[in-house]
Figure 1 (cartoon, one colour):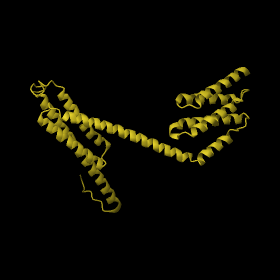
Figure 2 (cartoon, helix red, strand yellow):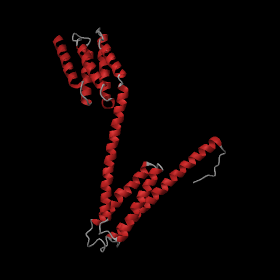
Figure 3 (cartoon, helix red, strand yellow):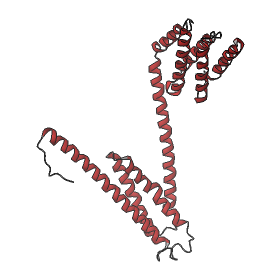
Figure 4 (cartoon, one colour):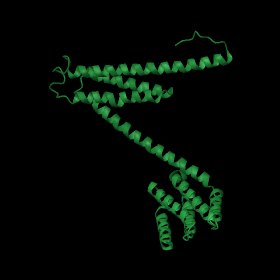
Length: 277
């Protein structure tokens, strides 16, 4: 029986060594599992294993502590929790909790050397880099979209009335997008305008350009309407969508003003129920 317990102890040490210094869910589970085994063995003839566990977890905890916390948050929490469990189990079984002193010293040194502030700076730089990458990706997409729109707009197969309608639509969408941004309108309304400009209008034009040139302006496609007529109607529908978005934005702005007015009236002035929108 004692031999089997010793084998369990050695297996727990090997398992902990394969997970304690690595990142990821699998490594965390291996560390937790081996720590629980060691905590259980603390009350047997293989109780010496808690000292090995405390040593391994001490080094892994400190090693993770000096990494950027936002990257290894779960690993830090797991390592220190397992270290506490093994140490408490060893203490309950009569083992001296020697690990408390070096770990405490290392944590104090980390704190004194500016560990918390260093973590905040690293996190801020990471957030900034991520934001810059996203902005670059969005700029790349916007540039590609602008190039595609320019190519579509200048395609000679588009009838002049449709081209003018498209030109007016895109100008309106740009102006409305800038207005919504400047007035801090809801993200949903801004996104809908972007969809009109970057998706719906180009899609309608591409569908028209996909028609055979010989039938695009001559043969009826639906209800006696040619492809050119259908394209013009789709662009007109999108004009209406912009009208609806602008109207909704004005309504929301008026509701905000009215809510502010009513609050101030209730708090400081005479209530006037006659104000409506």
